[in-house]
Image 1 (cartoon, rainbow, N blue to C red):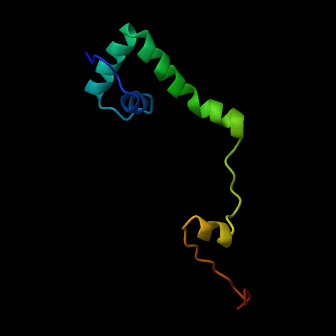
Image 2 (cartoon, one colour; image 1 turned 120 degrees about the vertical axis):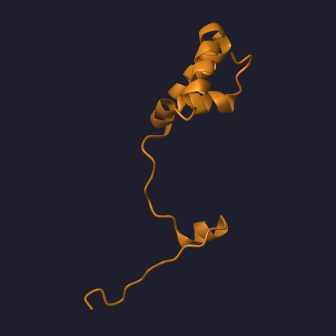
Image 3 (cartoon, rainbow, N blue to C red; image 1 turned 45 degrees about the vertical axis):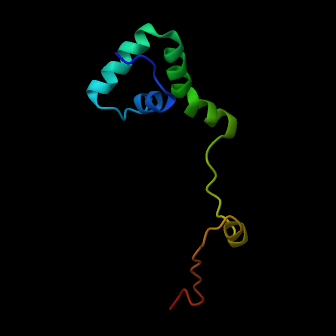
Length: 84
């Protein structure tokens, strides 16, 4: 049994990223550790809370000037003769 669970292990458990043996150990700990159980529940609720707070993710294009100021390079395809 795991003595104390760190957040990265709890997130991996909630996201289904642990192997069966590790997940079983986490489940044993969650059954006896109310603090860890509460943290796991918080991580399970995070996607819903974010959706309520911010809605759907924006799919708006990023302007070249904003991308450049953030250090990203954007390739813009411009087609002058779309019928050609």
